[in-house]
Image (tube, rainbow, N blue to C red; front, side):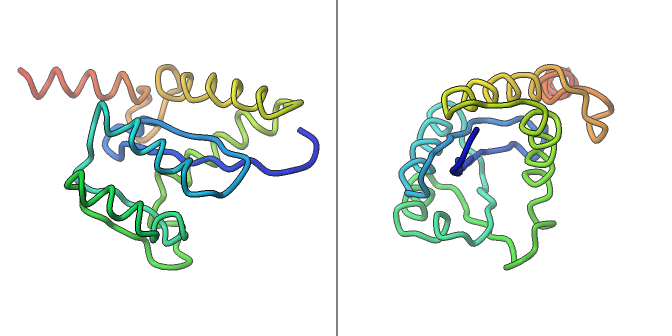
Amino acid sequence: MGKGFMYLFLIIDWYSGKVIDYELSSTLEKGFVLRCLKRAFSHCKPDIMNSDQDSHFTNKDYLELLEKEGIKVSMDSKGRATDNSQTERFFRSLKYECILLQEFENPRALRHGIARYVQFYNQERPHQSLGEASPVQFYADNDKKIAS
């Protein structure tokens, strides 16, 4: 994609591994994180929101939004990526199964590629930790068991 960076914020359901929502930005301004959260909260709200201690997650607007929505804040220890292993695992999969395999010419192409990958990851990609089910299938199968 030439020079420059893009930043990806995402929300993953730790139960099923499903990517609930994500936002891609060319800057590190906090607005892209807040937009993603508001979009996600319009259709589901977690009891707890876990994150690292990056400035996006320690700023007043982020913390106030979670408090307003009644969501508990959980932050990983500094320098402990393993505390947020589900998210780190997704980023590894995205990198090796999508980003490094394709030549994205511009941010628009990257957005499209990530959108396709997230759909694949959620709906088709088998996950060893889910008994080889996709996140959507795992959730649907276990929802049926709970309802029975």
